[in-house]
Image (cartoon, rainbow, N blue to C red; front, side, top):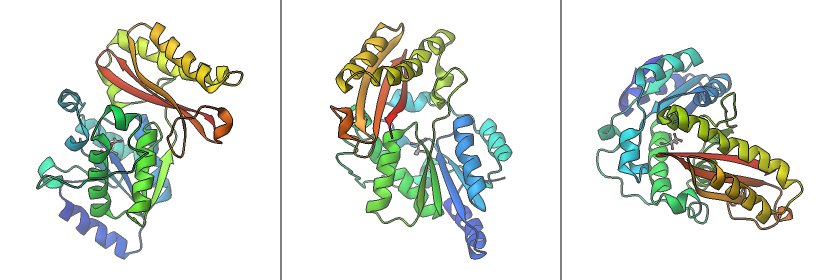
Length: 281
Ligand code: PAF
């Protein structure tokens, strides 16, 4: 696997391969890679001739400076994992390479980006769209791979691709969980032993709520999750929303949609964890 640091170098490598008719898959990441990322990379390797994985902790999507500073950075281990997965290029640009000048572009995909993460992390999705468009423009991939753990991000990127007429396919990949059920996240490495035990209650509650939902209303199911997290040691619920998986707008009855998803954000100590579960699809 080649490690490339500049857009110019990456484009000259890719232009030769594209001239030979090779299909290019892109997996955008912020590094601190785990088995969830590996599943995206392996899928891209299986579906394309060339796989580019970007590793870039994007400052414009962090609305909390502390979160940006504490974001884990493990480039050496990341490159080993990418090599094992069969990636061809790790694109590891500097901040100056991606933002030679401040990016003043504004992306707005209301109402998708005004709820949940959009409401609690103002500017977050604008920053995500800024970097993802820069990566799409640099790589011009045929396919790009994103995890369903960031359910709202995936919906917004799909909408962005539709509205901006990008000629590429977005592939959403299922959440990968630890053996005990906790959704894999780069942030999990920041959990202490005690916090890691407490965090398990998030996925457990979501799974239990799916059984509960079969016999209860949307409001009762929401209450069930809120009560379970409130009673769990060391966890603080930011939000739990039951939404239509396409519009991301809250639902009030199960028969309002054929695609019902529960999205949750919980603080486990200082670490902000997100997860989601499908009730109907
Ligand atoms: O999901 C992520 O890791 C990031 O939001 C992304 C898509 C790589 C953009 O920085």
